[in-house]
Image (cartoon, rainbow, N blue to C red; front, side, top):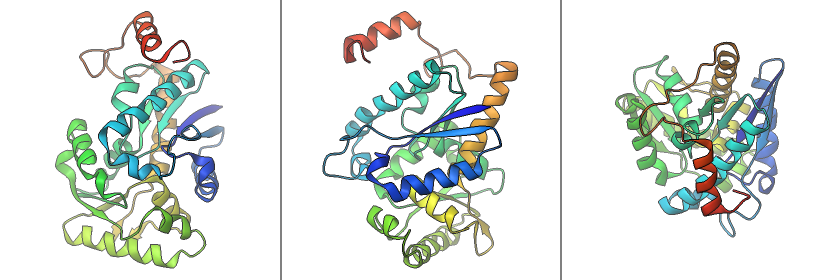
Length: 266
């Protein structure tokens, strides 16, 4: 048996159509014996605006990152087998993998790395234009920047994606237009961006546009989380523990610092 903690950047109960579609998709994609437990942001995290607005502001994104860190620490303490950061900007990925020993897998990192096994030029198609600088910076940090080509926005917003569960035609057409723009700019494999778009496309059975593959980003991340969890269980495989980006602080030092900033509940 295996338990995977899925962490969304969305308050999932605020978007029940997406939450339910996500549950169906990940449970269908999981291996026998794997349980994927969905977790979203705390109620009230985004008063008056969808998280896509917050993602466009660096300070707000960094504030919200703390919920991912807290969730990962809890996941390890509660015996989960892996922690899945299910948002394409990979919020908190570098920090979290230095704090816990259970496998940490991130949507953007996993999907682009996997896409590179299928093609030589990865196009990302998403619907939050403000994410592009963050995505490119992330991919450079991962050593994947040279294979990421066009990042193209679908002519749709979050409300359009939610409406597409009842009327899929307009969003399917908008995605195909955006994917073809990416293909025209040299992409030969497509990574769908944000989770809601990915889940919608997977539910519609979209795996190619013309003769170019479209990755199931969340399904890919889940598969990697399962594989990493198995390897960790069998061999203890985990990241290096050297240097600024990977060294793990002493647990007492970490607890004292978190208590200072966040109180005993941090």
